[in-house]
Image 1 (tube, one colour):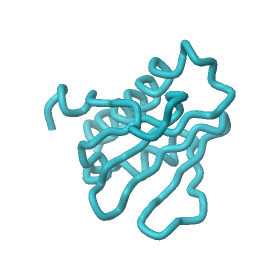
Image 2 (tube, helix red, strand yellow):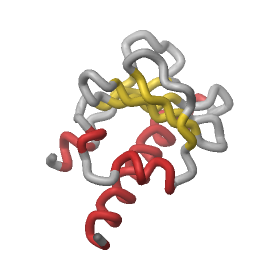
Image 3 (tube, rainbow, N blue to C red):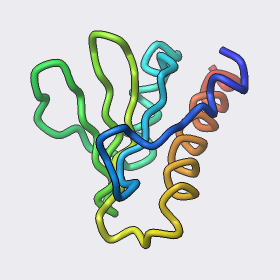
Image 4 (cartoon, one colour):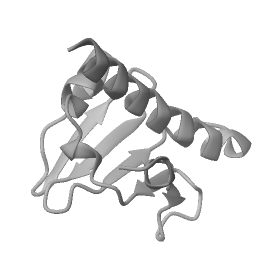
Amino acid sequence: MGAEEELELRPANGCIKNLTWECHANLAALPGFLVSLTELGYVESAPLAQLRRFTNASGDEFVIVLTSGRCQVRLSYLTPGPEREQRARAILNDVLTHCRTAALVS
């Protein structure tokens, strides 16, 4: 997975408030991805049909679509509007950095 693909994060089509961001890369296939989410403080919520949802203490969610591996970053509604894109990218980058670090250690 190249750096360009990793950082392709776009606002979801149906979200006019920029609270939901989509990444079409199959991040769930990365070694240690799910472990990284839990080590970063995300707790898995009850699964919904074809989704796995992980929520952090701030109320942000990381959602994985099981059929495609596509991911969504769903921001807490408390995230100020001007900070939403930066916050979504920071969440994605934190998870990817943690995955890479874990892969180097093991």
